[in-house]
Image (cartoon, rainbow, N blue to C red; front, side):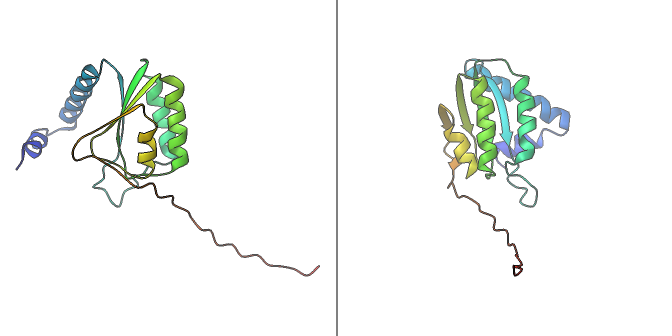
Amino acid sequence: MGNYADYLNNLRTADQVNTERQKILKKISELRDKRDILVIASDLSKSKAPISIDYTDILPVQDQLSNLHGKSIDIILETPGGFAEVVEDIVHLVRKKYESVGMIIPGWAKSAGTIFAMAGDEILMGSNSALGPVDAQISVVERTFQLTPS
């Protein structure tokens, strides 16, 4: 196996994963001049789970932002997409609070995730990162009307 798989296999408990996650996020913050860090990430391997950005994400993001106090933030973003209007609401929350917004895309930010990334002052991506097409999803609701003679 590769180094990354070996690294993950050594983290056996949820507490070990959480401790390692906090250590890595602190290191990113230090490398980026002590900026606040917010992670908005989906497990893209869970194709049957609801992993897109939707209305249930607004309150948790708002709650996390209330615990942060810097002037600059980096958002680590990984998402297959979601509702553009929710992304707009989240961007409004972030922009109201921060002077500078960086977007770190370690993997994918597709569709509404691409819109989200474009709202940043800078976008940091690696060789395996990808932004995706912005493809509006339109739901068609079929309605039946009955006309009555007047």
